Image (tube, rainbow over all chains, first blue to last red):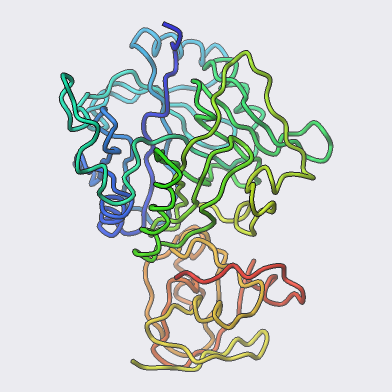
Length: 309
Length: 112
């Protein structure tokens, strides 16, 4: 098997200011499927076509933002190996017992130098995508409820030491850099896009003075037409759109950035190039950073670098 | 529907505000360039203002940007407050910088 080790972004836990308002938003506007609630009051969702029990968890708090971002690994043996590798690399890890998150196995949790908390886990209950594993249909009614992304795709994190974080992802977890934006000095990265698969990116980071900030979590759509449909649904529901529909130069993905009711940015993303670990990273310079981020506007909007939770 | 007058002390401008419209949307609809409309959900903190006089209703906003003391002293996020009387306000932080500069590049639109 070619794809081993870390497989994909598996779940993210986010804070919201008003739980029930946010449950309604993620259920009916984003079109995720609610899959459970736990004793702590957290609410669990998955995209309709995902098979594992949950990919987005929200909890009520007095400030929005990201609690943690997790990747699924291919086996318990890999989880043990990566935990040992992280410790050997000087990363402080802790174990979160199985069941602390609903239908989720033991997690290895660790901080990265951007101030974020990352988790790895090997097990999450397969609840299916609403279709049988024998002779399924192409889609189900949930595929048309709200924006209805097919999966949780990636995240963009803002924090200070993206170089230190990159080292952990590259040297320990087997990620590779797909694209980067280099500052005027010609060597310092403003932003990096990393993949653990053939996706255009599984996680991205932007250098930013405040630690632990969330720029966005992203959900995958199947076509540009569905991105336009998502924009219609955002207007119908008076969702604040940050920018789009448009295309990124970086990744070449089509996109809308918008905000949830607590001001957490999310993306509806489609397409994007494929990457392979033998390919050299694409570099963007500050002269062309506008085209890199927003390919049609060819300029950053005021909020891209300043509005985070 | 009730309407009130909202006065922005920093610039002396005022506008007719609907009780159904957040203070931020009212300010953005003034057409003044550079009003930083951020997340519109009380999360990012760019639209922080201080209400100097008048009454308003509010919704929950991030403690990271509005402390208990701030809230008690009418320092709030414009995207989460609605006027219930005439208001006088001044802008704080990032919004102040944008509102008071002459050639702000772009308006960021409104929350709606």
